[in-house]
Length: 484
Figure 1: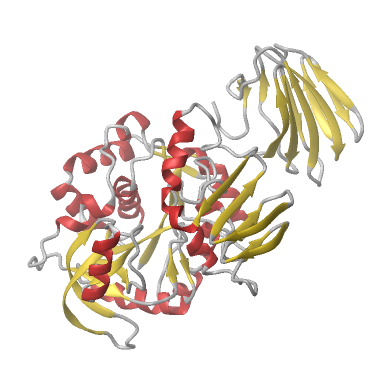
Figure 2 (figure 1 turned 90 degrees about the horizontal axis):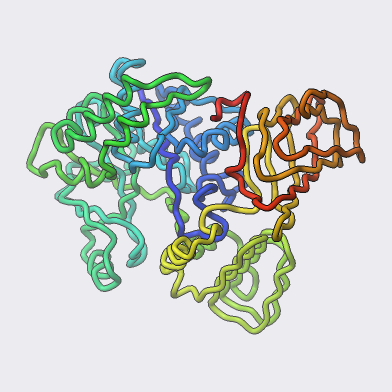
């Protein structure tokens, strides 16, 4: 039985400013009408029609747990488990937690580890290759999946292949031994890899028995295995989530599946054999703006235009607006991406340096590397409309049946105006309703709560005022979502 494991803990920076630490690319709609996470889960539907496959295990950062729930709810899919990483430790500890869950709840199922932020055009080819790989995984092999390179890409890791083992029944994939894994090369080295014909792009997808993964982790990285086993045993169920013990899990080293295990398996070793399935299915990690542009239609001037964009004498460019009118004149070979609080302008040649720019934003003490103006909460969303010294204005959208926590603020007061729906308000010892165009005032230091008992989204304009306006200025007394 195949047990898909969705690795959704990434927080990439290469697609800034759309991708942020609090809203990374797996939650973005980039190449289809669905987010990358949703596409990854929907892609699993075809596995069930080919052979036995179970609902996925999702591994994500604790801060993204409600966003995961919201996006899976939109596509009417329910994971078998959602495991929350209290601290990001890379993919090896994440897969170890999934293997422990599978061993406890399955009969040593075959794990199919899938990053949540990849795009595949030909799902039917993906399904056939997975089916082929499962046959070897069931025999005790450690499987990875490689993509034939089409360019000297410096943003991917590579797999050097050893002599071919054979062709499988439908000819969708060649099967070879893994000679070694190599990290992202410079351009000259990448060109040599491409010319040699011995290298594949490392897709980051893996398959193996849960018991095999645990054996290999204990052999090559016992400190990861020990920390994860103890964190799992001390973990707890929290509604739809499983929480490993934070203190114990924090002691695990941070490492990837590749570094921790895959590259340590000797090529001449028979138990397990380490093999790579080569396949072409329109794979892309959509990790750069040019990779995204390759999946989107272009105009007569070879521009990819998305959103409210007005180009004049623009060619070979990517111009994306997330809201405002973006006007561009007399440009060639550039990337411009607009969001409400930040704009990126770069030449295509420098897109791999965006990470350096984001690091500079982070170290400068700003917040644009981490947060959008719009933030997701378990009850809905809020968006910052304006802010200045001593004030901040937000637009709150509270979903039907949801509520903010019972809370108070030490440093600010709040004014609420209902612009849509009907609100139930708790303010101090008073409980009352507010209809559209009605408002109320919440003094500093007073316990309060907003509830939406209606059937439509409740929209509130909130004006905060005080000497200190800070999201950490929340003291919670009661919460429907288990937040502290």
